[in-house]
Length: 178
Image 1 (cartoon, rainbow, N blue to C red):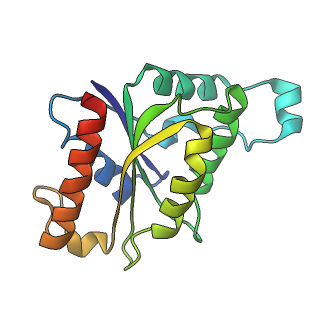
Image 2 (cartoon, rainbow, N blue to C red):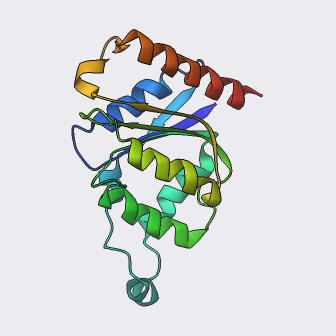
């Protein structure tokens, strides 16, 4: 099972990347491929730019990574209640290749933030919008107060949150094994 994972943030120290990597690591027997959004920085999408220059090779490479994966684990950073600009630009370019950009792959949607809502606004957007773009959302989880509730070695340290998270990991694992 090849799981493609990334944090939908361009931060070099992204807590969402850390959370995505941790989560993908909970899937027994999975081979994890980690993407860094900084490797896919492209000019700001516009139809004019697309008409003049076509779709960038980086967008095609990103799409191929999705196509080659068996499942996806993505943790979304929230900027002003929505996706980060870095992720949205990639989304805009890649969706021009194929509207169902997530290829009907099983999808574990995550979010986290330093705040009490854990990026729940952006996660709601993902849960409602991404199925129209071919994401088969099998599990989802929002981790509030990342720095209080997460340890790099132990993972989620709040017992109640850990129980809910483990349940979602099991749901995702069962869905990708079937």
